[in-house]
Length: 117
Image 1: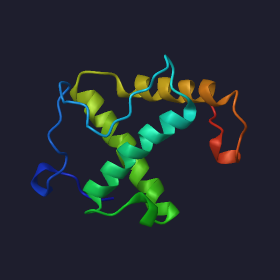
Image 2: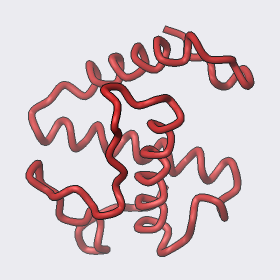
Image 3: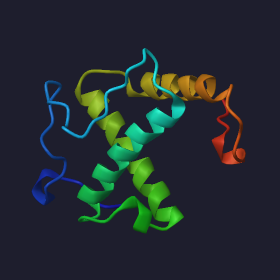
């Protein structure tokens, strides 16, 4: 796991009042589709991998490295939640529940898409 600290430029300074990036797509509907949600997540992963792996792209990582990077991002989001006084474990539980509900009406591409609750 890559050691992340302000001394190596990570994390970049963010606050709750940070402005939304120019390239962020706004959704015209009340509820974005799972595909649109995945596109937004891809942007976050691309930014994270590019920052942590010194400019590399998720498309250049082996599956194991991409899995590690995405797990690290989730871990870092939990640290951020704790720093904001939020319950990271509760948020993770809600995220898994929401994911399960959102994909329940979609075809399962493979067994890795299934979440045990």
